[in-house]
Image 1 (cartoon, rainbow, N blue to C red):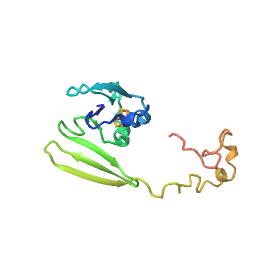
Image 2: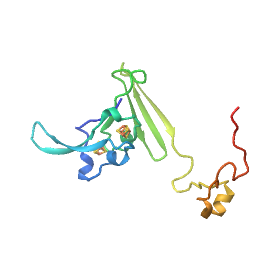
Image 3: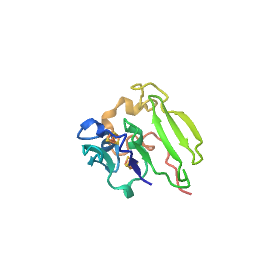
Length: 155
Ligand code: SF4
Ligand code: SF4
């Protein structure tokens, strides 16, 4: 089921040409559309999921929206009608808020990193690659065979 924008919360990313939700969507589904305020007749730009049937519910737009204006209509077996699932990313963890249809709310917090930002050593323990990264385009380099490990053989 697709994401949707709560227009009252969306500020159009404050007039930027490319909004956070447009930038992050892996399926290029988010767009900016003109919306006319029915009380004031003021024209405002709002984010919109322009092709909901193509949305694969990855939650990327929900997580990045700076105003928490995007939610997902969850599948009924996951969050029955009236329920919702909302992520709130932090610098080192993410908090998921689950609202059940009877109004009960539960929150779950999970760590999202094990080292400080900028301190990841992606070649740690991969000595050859670290020593000679210029070979990275060679066929077979940085694979099981190149490191003298056998590939699993199907039974
Ligand atoms: S990221 Fe959020 S605030 Fe920005 S345009 Fe999209 S829905 Fe609106
Ligand atoms: S949930 Fe994922 S696929 Fe759907 S609109 Fe948001 S970013 Fe795109």
